[in-house]
Image (cartoon, rainbow, N blue to C red; front, side, top):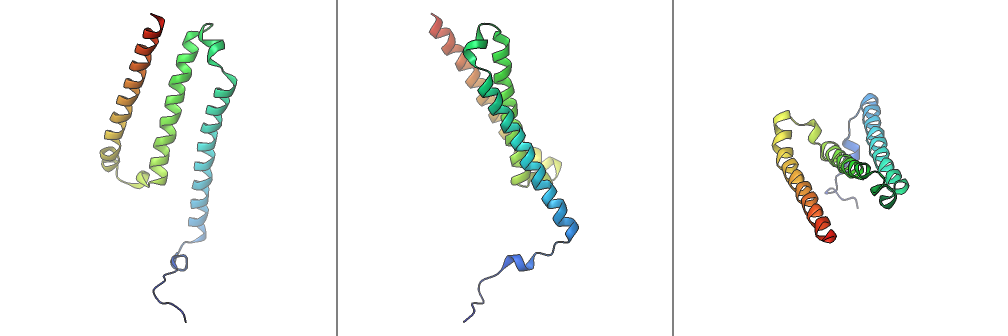
Length: 125
């Protein structure tokens, strides 16, 4: 007995070959971009140690931290735009969704950096 309440959605997909190629190209691009950013983060984390560079070049460690924050925000934004389909929406709707999150992330970064400085000063006393 065959059930009539189960819908097979794959049978109703009416994509042309060109659309399929475009979709696969986008998937490959997203995978490559996120993989490259992750590989850069891992390589920097493995090959640059804090103890060796903090005293020799203190600005280097600060720029590495800022770089990590920037790469993480780029990855997060790209994931939101692609996987949550926000990239296909109108410009004003994108900003209505993203602006509170950007403000919240900037606030969290500020608090984390401010408290890190306060803890660092407290440990040197």
